[in-house]
Length: 372
Image (cartoon, rainbow, N blue to C red; front, side, top):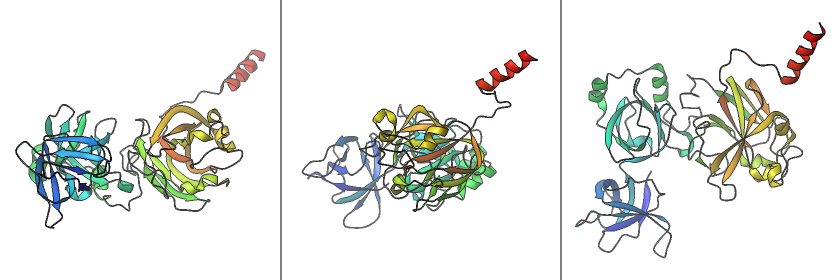
């Protein structure tokens, strides 16, 4: 992203940018700056980065210091990293979610420079890059047979191009071709391989009986939870990362409809509900009857950006679902206590060749055999 600059030192040896910790690579590194006087972007080095609190000079952000004996250009208006933070990684290390925008990278096949936690840098190929919905960054998909380092921390454009493709023998798979065509902000599908339309779970035909827009999103850090609110995912547990979720209006938190959300799920999947803890019995609240009857608490939590609701509890359907799915409203009787609407995610159910009978059925069957 691009961040506003302020509080430039009189000798231009330091400046502040309105960015969160981790947005800029620890120094020494470099960034691109744009001056108030106009003109294009200029790449300049910096030595160190430190978080600062709001004060009389400006808001909270990051303080960047120039290398010893050097200074930044005078009158910096905005700054952007050259290397961008890795927000999350797929469990098999074949995809990276990176905090940046499409204009910073070639659509692929190409390559990226990956900085690891120990500061070492290596070049890796990628087949495609796609923009995640709602400003959640870009999703890089590795070329076939390639895995990214498990401690990947920052990503910068590599040398890429045809030379890199020839060097590593890239072959664009059909899955990668599909991803490469999805790099625009209007795409409302699920991009991670486990949930991609060419993969396992696809959620379609999502509609709400409670008013407001409904979209299908991807559960990744910084993705918005609701279609009408700025609340975002801050931390997503590994078992939910990259899964499809339905982004409905937070204003529907009081909806009592029995068909508050209808949708179609392509594969056998568990529905997982993210619930405001204040609606749970342990916090003095009450859950809707349809949640109590068909779901059970997992003990998991998802962290959010909302100061009054920093985390949401995770509840899982007692049985996997497929095809048409209908969920009730967040405010359905005897719901009490919630200040935010329930959010629904879908995770593929593990394949099983057989299903065990419930305990009571097994006991009944045993009694029948004994009687015989």
